[in-house]
Image 1 (cartoon, rainbow, N blue to C red):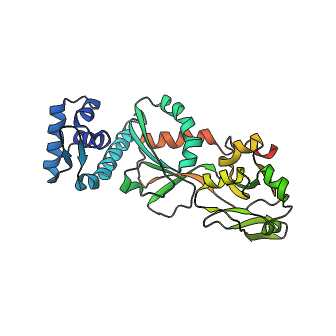
Image 2 (image 1 turned 120 degrees about the vertical axis):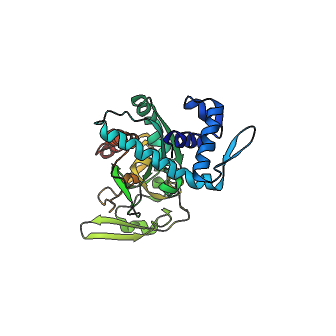
Image 3 (image 1 turned 135 degrees about the vertical axis):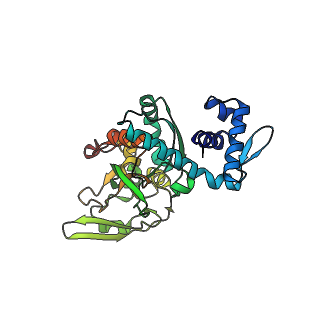
Length: 302
Protein backbone atom coordinates (compact mmCIF):
# COMPACT_ATOMS: atom_id res chain seq x y z
CA UNK A 1 0.00 0.00 0.00
CA UNK A 2 1.47 3.35 -1.09
CA UNK A 3 2.02 5.86 1.73
CA UNK A 4 1.57 8.79 -0.64
CA UNK A 5 -1.84 7.42 -1.60
CA UNK A 6 -2.79 7.28 2.09
CA UNK A 7 -1.65 10.88 2.60
CA UNK A 8 -3.82 12.01 -0.28
CA UNK A 9 -6.83 10.06 1.00
CA UNK A 10 -6.52 11.62 4.47
CA UNK A 11 -6.34 15.14 3.00
CA UNK A 12 -9.25 14.32 0.70
CA UNK A 13 -11.33 13.33 3.73
CA UNK A 14 -10.73 16.83 5.12
CA UNK A 15 -11.07 18.93 1.96
CA UNK A 16 -13.78 16.90 0.15
CA UNK A 17 -12.09 18.03 -3.05
CA UNK A 18 -9.62 15.89 -5.03
CA UNK A 19 -8.04 18.86 -6.82
CA UNK A 20 -7.50 20.78 -3.57
CA UNK A 21 -6.16 17.74 -1.73
CA UNK A 22 -3.80 17.02 -4.61
CA UNK A 23 -2.66 20.65 -4.76
CA UNK A 24 -1.68 20.53 -1.09
CA UNK A 25 0.58 17.58 -1.90
CA UNK A 26 1.93 18.99 -5.16
CA UNK A 27 -0.14 16.73 -7.42
CA UNK A 28 -2.18 17.60 -10.49
CA UNK A 29 -5.93 16.80 -10.40
CA UNK A 30 -5.42 13.93 -12.84
CA UNK A 31 -2.60 12.37 -10.82
CA UNK A 32 -4.53 12.83 -7.56
CA UNK A 33 -7.57 11.13 -9.06
CA UNK A 34 -5.39 8.30 -10.30
CA UNK A 35 -3.85 7.83 -6.83
CA UNK A 36 -7.28 7.48 -5.21
CA UNK A 37 -8.33 4.97 -7.86
CA UNK A 38 -5.18 2.93 -7.25
CA UNK A 39 -5.83 2.94 -3.50
CA UNK A 40 -9.38 1.73 -4.08
CA UNK A 41 -8.13 -0.99 -6.41
CA UNK A 42 -5.57 -2.12 -3.84
CA UNK A 43 -8.24 -2.37 -1.15
CA UNK A 44 -10.93 -3.75 -3.41
CA UNK A 45 -13.53 -1.26 -2.17
CA UNK A 46 -14.91 2.11 -3.17
CA UNK A 47 -13.67 4.76 -0.73
CA UNK A 48 -15.30 7.92 -2.13
CA UNK A 49 -18.42 9.06 -3.93
CA UNK A 50 -17.36 11.45 -6.70
CA UNK A 51 -19.40 14.29 -8.20
CA UNK A 52 -18.41 17.19 -10.43
CA UNK A 53 -18.22 19.53 -7.41
CA UNK A 54 -16.89 17.47 -4.50
CA UNK A 55 -16.36 14.02 -3.10
CA UNK A 56 -17.70 12.33 0.02
CA UNK A 57 -16.43 9.27 1.80
CA UNK A 58 -18.37 6.06 1.41
CA UNK A 59 -19.22 3.97 4.44
CA UNK A 60 -16.07 1.95 3.70
CA UNK A 61 -14.07 5.16 3.35
CA UNK A 62 -15.27 6.40 6.74
CA UNK A 63 -14.28 3.08 8.30
CA UNK A 64 -10.86 3.13 6.62
CA UNK A 65 -9.99 6.75 7.51
CA UNK A 66 -8.85 6.30 11.15
CA UNK A 67 -6.71 3.34 10.13
CA UNK A 68 -5.07 5.36 7.37
CA UNK A 69 -4.34 8.16 9.85
CA UNK A 70 -2.90 5.67 12.33
CA UNK A 71 -0.59 4.22 9.67
CA UNK A 72 0.68 7.69 8.74
CA UNK A 73 1.20 8.56 12.40
CA UNK A 74 3.26 5.41 12.96
CA UNK A 75 5.31 6.02 9.84
CA UNK A 76 6.04 9.55 11.03
CA UNK A 77 7.07 8.28 14.45
CA UNK A 78 9.26 5.57 12.92
CA UNK A 79 11.06 8.10 10.71
CA UNK A 80 11.66 10.31 13.74
CA UNK A 81 13.13 7.41 15.71
CA UNK A 82 15.87 6.82 13.12
CA UNK A 83 16.45 10.51 12.53
CA UNK A 84 17.75 11.14 16.06
CA UNK A 85 14.84 13.46 16.73
CA UNK A 86 15.73 15.76 13.82
CA UNK A 87 12.42 15.30 12.04
CA UNK A 88 10.34 18.42 12.66
CA UNK A 89 6.66 17.94 13.55
CA UNK A 90 4.54 18.16 10.42
CA UNK A 91 1.17 17.17 9.03
CA UNK A 92 -2.23 17.61 10.64
CA UNK A 93 -2.74 17.17 14.37
CA UNK A 94 -6.33 16.19 15.23
CA UNK A 95 -7.34 17.09 18.78
CA UNK A 96 -10.59 16.79 20.72
CA UNK A 97 -11.05 18.84 23.89
CA UNK A 98 -13.78 20.00 26.30
CA UNK A 99 -15.47 23.05 24.80
CA UNK A 100 -14.99 25.49 27.69
CA UNK A 101 -11.39 24.58 28.44
CA UNK A 102 -10.55 24.61 24.76
CA UNK A 103 -11.93 28.10 24.17
CA UNK A 104 -10.40 29.54 27.35
CA UNK A 105 -6.98 27.92 27.50
CA UNK A 106 -6.09 26.17 24.23
CA UNK A 107 -7.15 28.74 21.65
CA UNK A 108 -5.26 31.71 23.21
CA UNK A 109 -2.04 29.67 23.09
CA UNK A 110 -2.56 28.22 19.62
CA UNK A 111 -0.85 31.05 17.74
CA UNK A 112 2.32 30.62 19.78
CA UNK A 113 2.28 26.85 19.32
CA UNK A 114 1.86 27.04 15.54
CA UNK A 115 4.58 29.68 15.27
CA UNK A 116 7.00 27.11 16.71
CA UNK A 117 6.01 24.50 14.12
CA UNK A 118 5.34 26.05 10.69
CA UNK A 119 4.87 22.65 9.01
CA UNK A 120 2.10 21.65 11.38
CA UNK A 121 -1.62 22.28 11.09
CA UNK A 122 -4.28 21.63 13.74
CA UNK A 123 -7.85 20.38 13.61
CA UNK A 124 -9.68 21.12 16.89
CA UNK A 125 -12.94 19.39 17.79
CA UNK A 126 -14.51 21.01 20.85
CA UNK A 127 -17.05 18.79 22.58
CA UNK A 128 -17.85 17.81 26.15
CA UNK A 129 -18.57 14.23 25.05
CA UNK A 130 -15.97 11.51 25.57
CA UNK A 131 -15.11 10.39 22.05
CA UNK A 132 -13.28 7.30 20.84
CA UNK A 133 -9.83 8.46 19.74
CA UNK A 134 -9.09 5.61 17.37
CA UNK A 135 -12.53 5.46 15.80
CA UNK A 136 -12.60 9.24 15.42
CA UNK A 137 -9.08 9.40 14.03
CA UNK A 138 -7.83 11.74 16.78
CA UNK A 139 -4.20 12.05 17.79
CA UNK A 140 -4.89 13.57 21.22
CA UNK A 141 -7.81 14.11 23.57
CA UNK A 142 -7.78 16.69 26.35
CA UNK A 143 -9.77 15.40 29.30
CA UNK A 144 -10.49 16.37 32.89
CA UNK A 145 -12.06 13.05 33.84
CA UNK A 146 -10.63 9.75 35.03
CA UNK A 147 -8.95 7.61 32.39
CA UNK A 148 -11.14 4.56 31.83
CA UNK A 149 -9.66 3.03 28.68
CA UNK A 150 -6.51 1.01 29.44
CA UNK A 151 -5.49 1.13 25.76
CA UNK A 152 -4.79 4.86 26.14
CA UNK A 153 -1.82 6.69 27.62
CA UNK A 154 -2.30 9.85 29.70
CA UNK A 155 0.08 12.65 30.59
CA UNK A 156 -0.85 15.35 33.09
CA UNK A 157 -0.88 18.85 31.61
CA UNK A 158 -2.08 20.79 34.65
CA UNK A 159 -3.87 20.39 37.98
CA UNK A 160 -7.64 20.85 37.98
CA UNK A 161 -8.30 22.51 41.34
CA UNK A 162 -11.93 23.02 42.34
CA UNK A 163 -13.25 25.58 44.80
CA UNK A 164 -16.57 26.73 46.21
CA UNK A 165 -17.67 30.24 45.24
CA UNK A 166 -20.68 32.51 44.97
CA UNK A 167 -21.54 35.95 43.64
CA UNK A 168 -21.41 39.00 45.94
CA UNK A 169 -25.13 39.54 45.33
CA UNK A 170 -26.00 36.05 46.48
CA UNK A 171 -23.88 36.39 49.62
CA UNK A 172 -25.35 39.80 50.42
CA UNK A 173 -28.85 38.37 50.18
CA UNK A 174 -28.43 34.97 51.84
CA UNK A 175 -25.24 35.27 53.86
CA UNK A 176 -21.93 33.43 53.60
CA UNK A 177 -21.69 29.87 54.96
CA UNK A 178 -19.01 29.57 57.63
CA UNK A 179 -18.67 25.77 57.49
CA UNK A 180 -19.68 23.01 55.04
CA UNK A 181 -22.78 22.00 57.03
CA UNK A 182 -24.23 25.47 56.37
CA UNK A 183 -24.59 24.52 52.70
CA UNK A 184 -27.62 22.41 53.62
CA UNK A 185 -29.51 25.69 54.06
CA UNK A 186 -28.34 27.29 50.78
CA UNK A 187 -29.18 27.07 47.12
CA UNK A 188 -26.36 25.11 45.49
CA UNK A 189 -25.65 24.77 41.79
CA UNK A 190 -25.00 21.15 40.98
CA UNK A 191 -23.21 19.41 38.16
CA UNK A 192 -25.04 16.18 37.40
CA UNK A 193 -23.24 13.30 39.04
CA UNK A 194 -21.39 15.58 41.47
CA UNK A 195 -24.18 16.43 43.90
CA UNK A 196 -22.13 15.33 46.91
CA UNK A 197 -19.30 17.71 47.80
CA UNK A 198 -16.56 16.26 50.03
CA UNK A 199 -14.65 18.64 52.29
CA UNK A 200 -11.46 18.22 54.27
CA UNK A 201 -12.24 19.25 57.86
CA UNK A 202 -10.34 18.98 61.16
CA UNK A 203 -12.55 15.99 61.98
CA UNK A 204 -11.85 14.27 58.66
CA UNK A 205 -13.63 14.13 55.32
CA UNK A 206 -17.19 15.44 55.35
CA UNK A 207 -19.62 14.72 52.49
CA UNK A 208 -22.45 17.17 51.95
CA UNK A 209 -25.27 16.28 49.56
CA UNK A 210 -26.08 19.69 48.15
CA UNK A 211 -29.43 20.78 46.78
CA UNK A 212 -30.73 23.65 44.73
CA UNK A 213 -33.15 24.75 42.05
CA UNK A 214 -30.63 24.54 39.20
CA UNK A 215 -28.69 21.50 38.01
CA UNK A 216 -26.72 21.08 34.80
CA UNK A 217 -24.40 18.72 32.95
CA UNK A 218 -22.24 21.59 31.69
CA UNK A 219 -19.46 23.31 33.65
CA UNK A 220 -19.78 26.55 31.72
CA UNK A 221 -23.51 26.74 32.51
CA UNK A 222 -22.70 26.11 36.17
CA UNK A 223 -20.26 29.01 36.17
CA UNK A 224 -22.72 31.37 34.48
CA UNK A 225 -25.44 30.45 36.97
CA UNK A 226 -23.03 31.09 39.83
CA UNK A 227 -22.07 34.53 38.47
CA UNK A 228 -25.75 35.35 38.00
CA UNK A 229 -26.44 34.67 41.68
CA UNK A 230 -28.50 31.50 41.32
CA UNK A 231 -26.57 29.83 44.11
CA UNK A 232 -23.28 28.56 45.45
CA UNK A 233 -21.21 26.57 42.99
CA UNK A 234 -18.30 24.18 42.89
CA UNK A 235 -16.14 25.20 39.94
CA UNK A 236 -12.72 24.54 38.47
CA UNK A 237 -10.33 27.42 39.04
CA UNK A 238 -9.45 27.47 35.32
CA UNK A 239 -13.11 28.23 34.64
CA UNK A 240 -13.74 30.97 37.22
CA UNK A 241 -10.37 32.67 37.79
CA UNK A 242 -11.24 35.71 35.64
CA UNK A 243 -14.55 36.21 37.49
CA UNK A 244 -12.67 36.01 40.78
CA UNK A 245 -10.20 38.63 39.58
CA UNK A 246 -13.03 40.95 38.54
CA UNK A 247 -14.90 40.48 41.81
CA UNK A 248 -17.86 38.84 40.10
CA UNK A 249 -17.34 35.74 42.24
CA UNK A 250 -16.04 35.29 45.79
CA UNK A 251 -14.25 32.20 47.02
CA UNK A 252 -15.84 30.82 50.20
CA UNK A 253 -15.14 28.04 52.71
CA UNK A 254 -11.39 28.55 52.30
CA UNK A 255 -10.65 26.69 55.55
CA UNK A 256 -12.42 23.59 54.21
CA UNK A 257 -10.84 22.63 50.90
CA UNK A 258 -12.65 20.24 48.62
CA UNK A 259 -11.33 16.70 48.47
CA UNK A 260 -10.59 16.56 44.78
CA UNK A 261 -7.65 15.08 42.92
CA UNK A 262 -8.52 16.16 39.40
CA UNK A 263 -6.21 17.10 36.55
CA UNK A 264 -6.17 18.16 32.94
CA UNK A 265 -4.86 15.22 30.93
CA UNK A 266 -3.57 14.76 27.42
CA UNK A 267 -4.63 11.32 26.28
CA UNK A 268 -3.41 9.43 23.24
CA UNK A 269 -3.53 5.84 21.93
CA UNK A 270 -0.90 3.46 23.24
CA UNK A 271 2.11 3.41 20.94
CA UNK A 272 5.73 2.48 21.40
CA UNK A 273 6.68 5.33 19.08
CA UNK A 274 5.11 8.71 19.79
CA UNK A 275 4.67 10.88 16.71
CA UNK A 276 6.69 14.13 16.81
CA UNK A 277 3.56 16.25 16.33
CA UNK A 278 1.91 14.62 19.36
CA UNK A 279 4.98 15.00 21.52
CA UNK A 280 5.38 18.64 20.43
CA UNK A 281 1.81 19.50 21.46
CA UNK A 282 2.02 17.75 24.82
CA UNK A 283 5.41 19.23 25.72
CA UNK A 284 4.39 22.75 24.68
CA UNK A 285 1.22 22.89 26.75
CA UNK A 286 2.68 21.04 29.74
CA UNK A 287 5.44 23.65 29.85
CA UNK A 288 2.95 26.48 29.33
CA UNK A 289 0.73 25.49 32.25
CA UNK A 290 3.38 24.12 34.61
CA UNK A 291 2.78 22.74 38.08
CA UNK A 292 1.03 25.97 39.10
CA UNK A 293 -0.83 27.21 36.01
CA UNK A 294 -1.47 30.90 35.48
CA UNK A 295 -5.12 30.58 36.50
CA UNK A 296 -4.04 29.41 39.98
CA UNK A 297 -1.06 31.70 40.58
CA UNK A 298 -3.04 34.53 42.19
CA UNK A 299 -5.73 32.36 43.73
CA UNK A 300 -4.56 32.69 47.34
CA UNK A 301 -4.71 36.48 47.06
CA UNK A 302 -8.35 36.53 45.94
